[in-house]
Image (cartoon, rainbow, N blue to C red):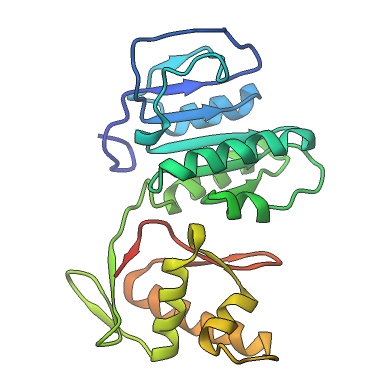
Length: 251
């Protein structure tokens, strides 16, 4: 068993700066892929989730088509320079088109400004910018793993008729407005919506709305869910809106 209680992960692929054209392992469906470049980050991830993983040196993603991303459970992307964002972004989009359940981590290790909006829209689940202090880097990565749906899976059901957010053991009564917000996030592309889109969902004829009032409504809903289920399922996307914790709410 995994140290976090997750099912065993038989294989991890490390993609470093060296690329071996046509490199083959005979395994077509590894559980985890990591596109990391710096040794420090590779070592940190290795320490956190290492016991059941086979590490490979590298492979040429463009020339070697043997690996099946559709069955993978997690992906780690490192952004170590600002100019490779577009490469990572396109690969995240391609992965998410065919794999709706995997947990995608974007890990920023450069010191220049970085906006996570495009990666969240592409389908990423966690975008974190690592601090400069080594111990803090590992702590942040560890907390992010702990909070992810990959390491801490949960299943809630949205009952639109009875206005309930349920699990097998308990249920939470919600308002029609709160139900509408959750429903909109479930059906949004990659579970992410802007504040304007949420406001429009609540009132299709709306022209002006108070963003602070919407924020308070969502904040109250998040607090209710956190108190009942000890889960953060509605997450903020800075300067954009909100997203839903992947795979947690069905209905």
